Length: 429
Image (tube, rainbow, N blue to C red; front, side, top):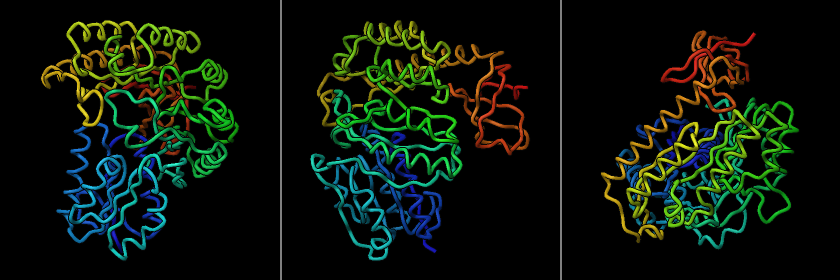
């Protein structure tokens, strides 16, 4: 029996696609092993969003070659799209797969492994005409399922290479999305996470949009929760908020990347809003959904960020009070506009990231404590003995005593206390 190993770098879209690669390999009768082990096949799902991510992608390629020089090695994803020529020249790499033809690669995988020859599936981004659906029946290792509904980006933020590696925006056909969701529900998934590079721009250029898709997904019997993985501020429409108010099945958590809370930095980033607009929209969301969790992404030490600009960001973040933040020290990415700007010293970037991370920890504690004595709906993910754990609609990690038969189901839990691991509660009733 042939073995395969996979390593995934980067975003949730990559994680979704990796599930398709795993499912296909298992269907072919291959046995999955840890990436650190010697394997017959290595699949490396790469990322190129920063120079660091690209470096990690290269490291994983070399690791696979070192562990088994005779293995079939496929390098897939954004780094492949950006550096196809260099990767193809690597001794030991068999397949280079970019931002399209991933389905063709999977359909040919068995033959490619047997023939052990070099192939290149990378095309120019302007030659990618449509959304590519990767067939997934179920997520074997997860209670929730991911559904990739959108790919590509038209925004061209000054720090980001994604438009150059993923191409322009394109979306999964609405009926196909509904059909995939039905399959996932029939295979035991009660929560589906809608993912994409710009999930909120689903359907642009077609007769559908995110609200239309959500309305159809809400009709699926057995689909108890729909979560939106990430959405931009200017994509949170009034129609979306009204739908969320009417349908509690849509998770009470929106991850809305702000990236900076300084107007001058936002302008250099080429972000399509200012701080005032962002704060006003957050206030409107909270007015309609008072207990909603709103998290964000933020970049510390962006190109030419002054001390005053950083202090402005700290002040405004404190004013907004997110439920938590994903903080990233700015990492220059070659071939982007920001890479040509004046760069902040790495030590300063790390110091600013630490300040923001400390503030995030404080806000996370405050938001979690606001749930004490309240009840929330929890998707049960694991149970060891009578100790169960899951996430609430608001994405709070919740632990309580329960039965292993609850795994995969949504239950109501009353929160009693909060510690460093999350919220502690008990089953309601």
